[in-house]
Length: 510
Image (tube, rainbow, N blue to C red; front, side):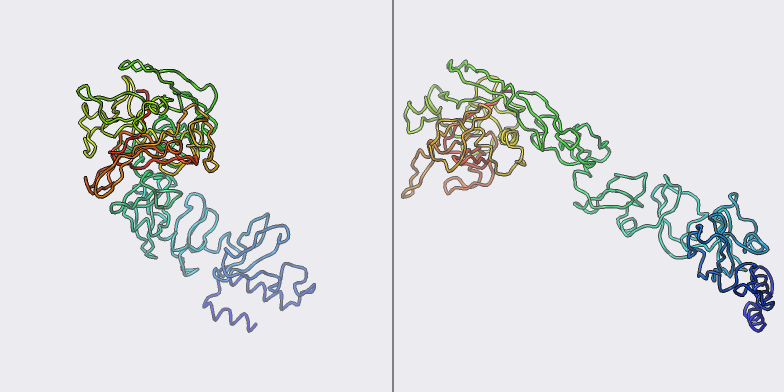
């Protein structure tokens, strides 16, 4: 009885379920009910589970069927019946007399309970403790997607997700970046901070992104390997790969179609056949070979289609002239024998057809686009990118500006020294590059001398792209032009050569 008096003294009132449960327990104990202290009539206090809050109740499974539990925070008792914990006592819900009915009609309603001395939310069945987040967001109503509001109870910031029609807690990026909240409806949306920090909304969070993702925003990221133009820089091209945009490679730009994780093993045919593996790779099936006759002097050259372009398969041997006088081209060692073997060697001015373009050895003439240069009609001097595309399409591991092993695949079986340090001369595609060497310039006692070097060990071909960093004591900066070099070892690269050097020329069909 003392325990019962203490309960009344603590609660200050004898009413509701608390009193009923306590009185019942007291009477059972006082009557000395047998069978383990409860006379076989319902569980004793010793048998009941004791938990702090409703959320702490274990799953109501078969092992707990008919058991009861006391929830300390609610000062309420629940019974496990048919897989659910249900309130016991004179009321279906301990808070019913205090807060009114709880059902689907008022699910989510929050009220201050004098009985429980805290805020309660209706979960559709009964009233349970409301969290600060529920108090901050319930009943607030909708807003613009991504709108941010501060909770009045906790001070926590929340963002409105219109797709879920709910307020969600923000993270630092939602608040600090100034873009608003990242939500389902804003998935893949991008934003920029300062000049070079880009972010993309992904899986409910703002994450750092690439410029490609930023520039390509607004384009659908599909699986068709289509190239799309940038929305900020219209000349940029991108392709969707592995569910994100990346910059299209020079090879993909030349092909006009991406090679991605979505179209592996796709085959296409342009000047030559290609297959998408890790990148577009030229195939050796049905290589298209032909001939070209230069109507200026009647010389005929072999041609071959490799990837997206058709190339001359022999070095140009046209005697370039200005005012009927040979200009800027030489035979190796000034011997006609070597012109027949290697073709002619051209300074950059001659290769660019300076009489037409005004491109001198040390001047950036501002020519853009395809430059015919010294090539026959309907053909042009390849720029540095076209040489890169050739290297890329025969060496799928190369990425635009890296060194490449493609030289071995482009070298002819003959025309090279026997010992090339293990470099193979495969001539896999019929390009048939030979080691024609080049004309260098050496300085001796402050005088320049023309020197022919590296025959049968190196092939160097001009591009139409002007260099910008080579310097010499005679002409200063800007003394170079880009050239493609194939080494005896089978390696290849694109690098600057002095424009006064005389190199080989291969032309590409327009």
